[in-house]
Image (cartoon, rainbow, N blue to C red; front, side, top):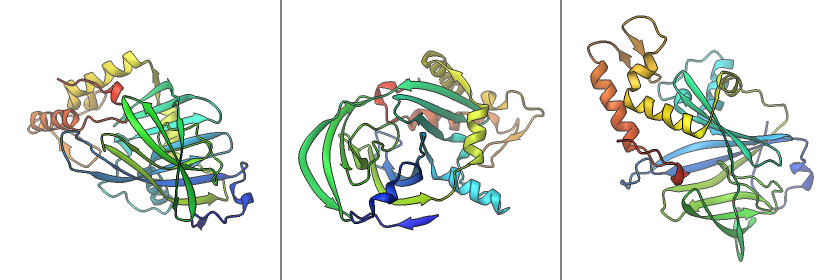
Length: 272
């Protein structure tokens, strides 16, 4: 892989559509809309010749660790993450929601009605242009560059005449910043993403919503389903047994209810 600096002077051939390009975003967001506490994570946007994939950096790290026989750190969140993928030129998005051992595949049609402005600014030697849209129950501001000729962006944002470099909502709940670009000389074959897709179960919105509610009502029973024995381990290494099952179940329910501030605010599930 060859790392680059984001500059306007890059040769046009670097952005050849026949290659795969990885764009890494810093994502700063509020898990709890009622709190001012911010969480910062890295996400990857891999733009392939035929498709794009957006996922948490943990998937990339895990793939590198397993290739070098290095144990996973405890904070790795492979089984509580989301993968977003779509084919080039399509508005249909496949969203893979990983609930420990259950992987739900929800297909949605997503598009944004962008309003381009004449405002521009310079960031890292790139010329950015401002655009706005209302999407998912939020008002968004995007800064994109025509100097990187991909009509893509983080999550499900797309359709501008260039890559989205900055993106934030009017509630200051989410902010995406492009921090690095990498050209991949070889095809990407992330085993965890591939396995998640193969293990996923296609569902409708109503079924997806009911499954998420069932998970909330009793996380421990949901996760224990199909496992043998009186004890098992959560993804973070917590041992669950008959003595602590109720306590852990209540704690997980509180976390799910509190950290319920999705990008698509109009798809927020009401946990009672």
